[in-house]
Length: 438
Image (cartoon, rainbow, N blue to C red; front, side):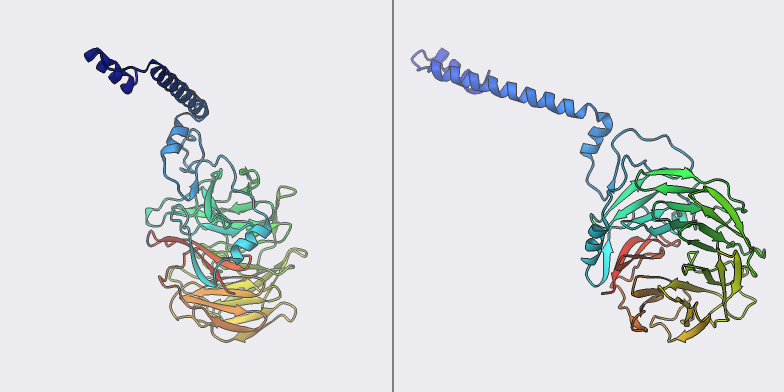
C-alpha cells in the first residue's frame, strides 16, 4: 500500500471527523498499479536482452570503455602461443577514401595516437591499405614472445584485437602484405628460430598455415613481395655461418621454390630487419656481414640484386656506406640508402650507378637507421628524423617531438603520413605516433 494512502486511513481511524475522498484514493491506487505493471514489464525486457549474453555480457556492461575492442562471450582455452582474447569480429573495413581523409586531417608534424594495447618490441608492423597490422614481437625485458596482435583503425583511432596466429610467439618475423593477406614467416624466440609461417586474411579474421618451406629455421635478412611471390633470403645469425640461400612462396599455387644462392652472404640489412627494396623487377639488398662484435671484414656495405624472372643475382657497384649499419627504401624510381654515420647515396637501377648525397640533417650517434617512403617523401630515422624530397632532390630537417618519444618499431608509410608503433626492448615505453610531412 502506498504511504500516502496508509497515512490517510490512519488519520481517519484516529479522528472519525477526518474527511476521506474515496474517489481520489481509488485514482491513486490505479496509478500505482499501472506503475508496478510498467516496471515489471521493463525488468522482463531487460532480462530477455541479457540472457543471450550470460555472465560475460553482464561483465561487459560493468567494464569501463577502452581503446581495444573485446569480444562478448566465453574466453578461449589458454594456449602456449597466445594469451589474448580471440576477436569475435574483424576490425571495421574502411574504404581507401575514408582512410585517406582521416590521415590527411592529421596536423602537420607529429601527432600522438592511442598506443598499442601492450608494449611490443621487434613486432611485425605493416600498412595493409586501410589499417596498421601490428603482430608478434616480445615484451621487452619480460622476455615473453607473442603470437597475437591488433589492427589500428585510423578513422576511429582505435585498436582492434584479431585472432592469434596458429604459430609460436616470435620476434623479427618476415612479413609482407599481398593486397589480400598478410604473410608472416620465420623469426626467433628465446634462442630458437622458426621455419614455419601463416597467412592472415583481415576480411574474415582467419589464419591459414603455410606449407613447409625448403629452408632451415631463421630470421631472414631480406623479404619482399614481388606481386606474385614472397621472397625470403639470408639469415641474421652471427655465428660465422655464411648463409646464401633463400626461397620464394606463391600463395596462388601454395608452393615454395628454392632460389639461386647469392654470391655472398649478409646477416644485417636494416634494423629491425629486413629492409629490402623491390624495384618492380629486382629485389635489392644493402647490408653487411657482421660477427658477434659487430665487426665486418668488408670496408663498406654490400649491395646485391636478385631477379626472379631469370633466377639470377648480381652485385651492385661499391657504395661507401657503413658496413655496421645501413638501410634502404624505394622512392618509386631509385634506391635511397643511408647509414648511422650519416652518409647517404642514391642508386639508379637503369644506369647501375650510385650517387653520393648530402648528409641527412639528424644528430650523429650510434643508432640503427630506418625509414619509409610515400609517393613523394622519404622519412629517414636515426637519432632524429629528416625528410628527403624526391621531387626537389634535397633533405629537409624535421623538428623533434616535444616529449622525444617516437615509438620504436618500423617506420611505416601509410598513405600521405608515416606511422611508428611499438616499444623499446630496454623498457616498457610504448606508443604510436604519426608524422605528417605536409
